[in-house]
Length: 431
Image 1: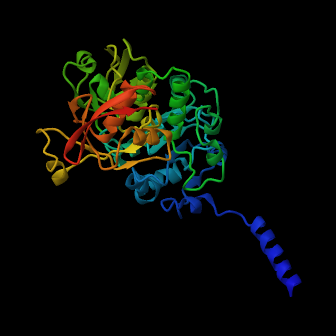
Image 2: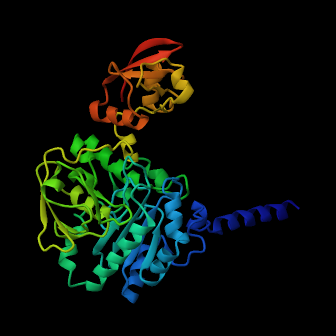
Image 3: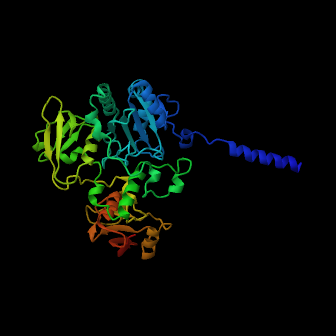
């Protein structure tokens, strides 16, 4: 009997070793992709092979499945909108990329702080365009099925003229990187965890790429504010683009470079600095690669043979980047959760009119930063009511950004706490 039992145990163990893990779609619980045959799933090489065989352009979407932001938009693109579904199946080779682990970062350069992004490329690697834009207005403020469909049609037009227009597309790919994949990036933390079989709890998210870039620059002492003003919106030049079109000017802000150049609402942008435009993200790509000083941006519009020259001024890239997920990993790190106090809870604090407060909801004492704050006297339940002697008038994300932009590890942040009805002056040690 013992021999039989031992044999069964050994057979069971060998069977477990031979068992294959569930498919990636099941491990990630990617329900938006289930049953959607128009997508090649997380297999770039297969997409390229199909594009070469069929002569179609490649439509690549990047989606972090566990992230809730952009979930409804992703569902529309992945399975619900019939027009997008038919175009993705009949006119493109469509690839759904759900992890950044093996992505060629030289080929796929986009704003990695997005929760949903797309790129359109030729089988030879030429980039036709990008889609996906986000700001402090929210993850869905600029994305729409209408503008995605228009971007796809503009890509098909570019593809139909290829390779005669190849020179105009050359700058869309981006400069080579010193590494190929995320796991090769010197600044990527937790490589051992990320290097394992991909599950929902160890995906390399898109923002981890910016995290790694920021950390490497910080370690080298080269992380400047200018490097943080990534992917500026055309709004920074005075151009507000219709989010349902992606290229049509909705409004020109007075007193801006766009206004001085004579651009008008209703015009459709066809090229910026010679690069064909398929979406707002394409405009951002051009601006992203310019310096934060005096630059000349040439904007071509439909129906005009003359490009308009917009001249920027120093600091033109600066904007509210508190929404960016990659900001949290930049030293100094707070490791304290401080949600905004609202409604009746705020009224009970009896603060001056117009003031707000942040609640110390949780201190991560498993981190050195959290332990340092706790040991210095910060307590859960404290209310932060002033920063540097001024009443709090910022969101938790803006508070986090303020610390990153104005302090370095080793500094102490002066805050005023409200604890049991009494004000406490606190020097927050930063790491």
